[in-house]
Image 1 (cartoon, one colour):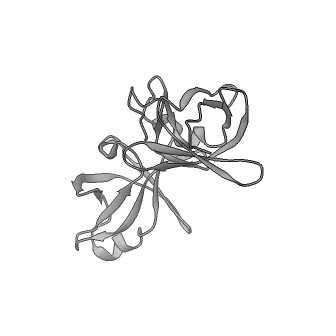
Image 2 (cartoon, helix red, strand yellow):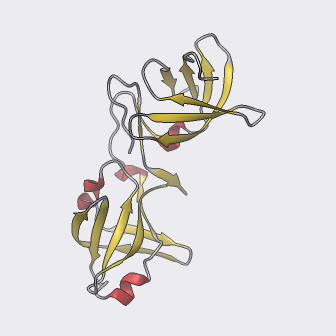
Image 3 (cartoon, helix red, strand yellow):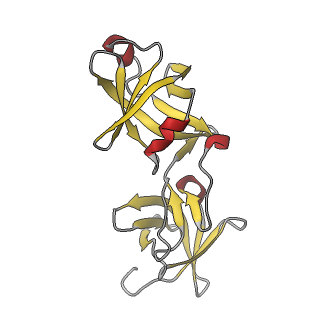
Length: 185
C-alpha cells in the first residue's frame, strides 16, 4: 500500500492488481534448510501476512493455497514457513511465485487514500483545464511519490505527489486535477 501524509496530499497504496487479485508479495528464494522462504513484500504493511490464512500462491505453472505456519521479519523481507513445505527442495519450487489476495481481503482505505492500481489510467488535467495526459506510473522515491503522466505523443511529465501539486482526485470521473509548479514541464 502507498499512503500520502496529510501534508503531502492524497495517499496511494502500493498493492499490485492483476486478474482480480492483489499481489502482496513475491517469493524470492528458500531460506535455510527447513522449507522457509524469503518474500519481497509488495504492500506498505508487511505485517498483513500475519492476518492471512490460507494464502494464494501463483506462478507460471502453479496455483495453490498454502497455510502460513510462521511469519517473521529480516531486514526488508518477510520470512514465511508454510505447512507442508518442510525442506529446501520443496521451498525451491515456490521461487518466483506471487502471493495474492482477493479484493475482499484488501486493507480498508482512509480519506484521500488510493491503491496505485486505481490511480493508473486517470486523466490528469491542470487547474486551468489543460489535459496533460494519462497517469501511467507511480515512482516511489522515498521523500514523496512522483506521478508519471504520459501525453498522447508519448512525452512524459513528472508530477510530485504533494499537496501543492495534486489538488484533487475524482475516482467517479477518473480524473486528477493538478497544479504545475514552475519548472515541471
